[in-house]
Amino acid sequence: PIYLGDYWKSAAGAKDRAYNDAFAKDLVTGNHEALLKQYGVGAGSFSPSSVVSGKAPRTVTEADVVKLVKQQIASGAVKDGAQTVHMVLLPPGTVLKDGSDTSKQGLGGFHGSYVDDSGKSVYFGVICYSKGSNGIDFTGVGRDNVTITESHEFDEAATDPDVQTGKLGWYNSKYGEIGDLAVNSGLVPLAQAYGKDSGGFDVQVEWSNKDGRFLPGT
Image (cartoon, rainbow, N blue to C red; front, side, top):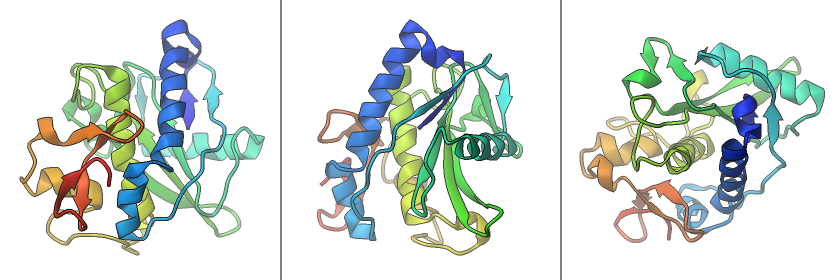
């Protein structure tokens, strides 16, 4: 995780950051990750997070995220790797933009990649601090909304990392990526699109081939 802005150093932000770090560790080793094994995803690991100081930006775009990730890697603040996903966490109130879509219209986050100077793909995701009218307010609790969206984007980054280049991984031609399947198929109402994983964190449910239903983990 890369935490953007001074909020993450405040008393409330430090608690949210510690909670999200614990979630990120659990996400790649718990029963949610076990469900993703059905889609070819192996066990993961957690690298130390980074906090980028500064005033909270009013808006953040994909170009901003790519620039930030490049700076963090170049400075050594975060480690890069062929299968690393750099998750950028925005502070409360910052509006996320993706083309004409914004978090004020229900955008919670997205994932993508860029090619560095050596020709290697670098993977990232960006997560809005969803609360109220900004992002997707699943539960009314900001940190839980963050983990739900973060699991969605991590799942898609792990199963369909090169979607921006047209080299598709797991992709359903009708409903989209793995994280979109529950909601876009109409099979799961938004209020039931998340649940607790084995670590007690809120995550999005995903389709379990083993169980024949949507689950937070298996």
